[in-house]
Image (cartoon, rainbow, N blue to C red):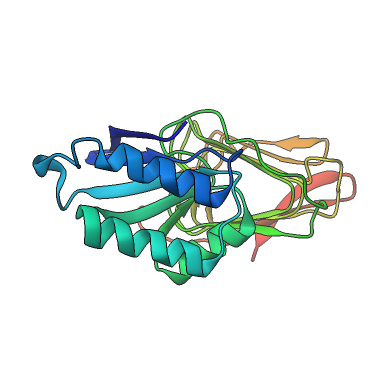
Length: 228
């Protein structure tokens, strides 16, 4: 069911437009038009920021561009982000310089993802993974921000965190002992590689603002962390 509602993305109040994945693209567009034309979008919503929840739907660049343009021109809605697990949809959204999420920010359960060959595709998350979020991907996961305490990132391949890793990271989740975890600052609650588990030392007390890129891998049967 196509649904338009208000929601909060962190401290930001936005609109969320959910588009079902089982209908054809033309059917979904007709339903979107019906929802938006129902008394037209309220005047108070004109100029509002909008997130599109595509779920598992695959959308190419051209139809996504047409939709974003129409939402802006006909309804004064500014699309700022896409939620979806399909790689084609994610790439199209990035080409339009939209934020891309594999799951709705602030939720604890991921959107069901389509099957993929383990290790064959990478998921890029440009922002911080917040407390309560769980990312589970059949490939490598790249996080452009931090992984906060209380967040989980699970990958069948490697995990790369360009910010600070404070939550749980599980690389090689299907038993790949060659998987690695990289972090700009390695301060996790717990890291796992395949079936091995390690935690940060209790006396770890990093200098504020310091960057100490490190990489975790299995060596001699145990997780070893070394400078990257």
